[in-house]
Length: 368
Image (tube, rainbow, N blue to C red; front, side, top):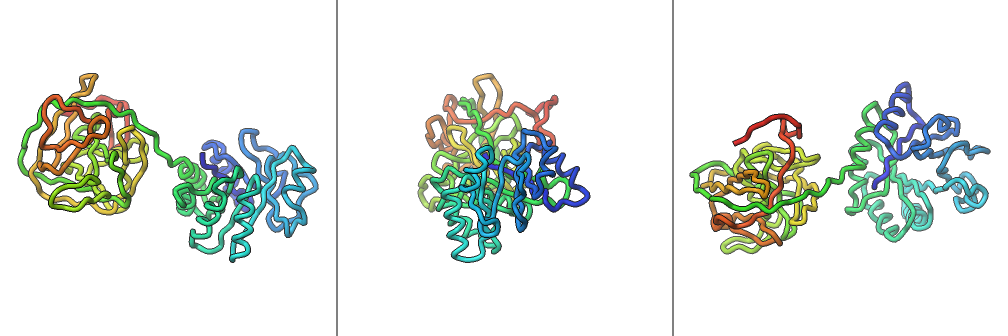
């Protein structure tokens, strides 16, 4: 789990409202430079004392973590831990050059907590520290200037920093920071659907979804004509005659079709564009968010596929009517859409709720 620390040391008039927001959204830590500012916080949150640029106080009060600057404070976290075994200690490192980068790597390898401030906008130094601390049992907290940078920090080298410390500029930033820290998407329970019939239905517009990511061979996106039933369309990772593989692409279906994005929200294929997020899903239901780089919409012949779930629910998918457009079956078998026949099994997903502007909602909705 990624950690979100709220830096409350320089909050203005909105301090109380921002602190309440942080508690409501269950941020993991609040950072202060005065022990008195931590006194009224509940025990459910990590109370972090970080007197940056100031002397260490004689008493740490209710602080559960204290971040020190050894060069300024004249004492190391290890020495403080011997004197105060009830408190956890960490080191602050500001990275401005090669020597301080090495200090950050050493801290990330050895300290219980490392709070890192990178002065240059490049994320290469952060990548180096993450790699250096790969086997460390400590936690690395990186300072972010805003939520956008926090999202980047959480994703660097696919592992990201263990946590982010951020000083919010307004009410709402704490909620967005927590959302960035919990951006992982849940896995899905896929089901086997039985094909009932296919039908050539003439011309229409279909969408190819080109992403900024290479799909795996057992991975694609879920697409369906109705919000409560989708079929797993495989990417073009498998060899085809007459054309090269395009492992970043899913020939996904007719433009009216739904696909899934974050928080099980649906999007029409027609509304996806560069920068949109879609949910990549493998045959085990494991998921990840991927970024759309381009959507190609072109007129093509279409084929309609009707299938049924074990519970009797009907599922429909309309695809380009061509042999090279494929879906996935049990065990990752790749099935050419134009060769599907009654009795064939394909993998799908049955969302439990209807949709209103793409969001799941528990209401009556008939789709046919």
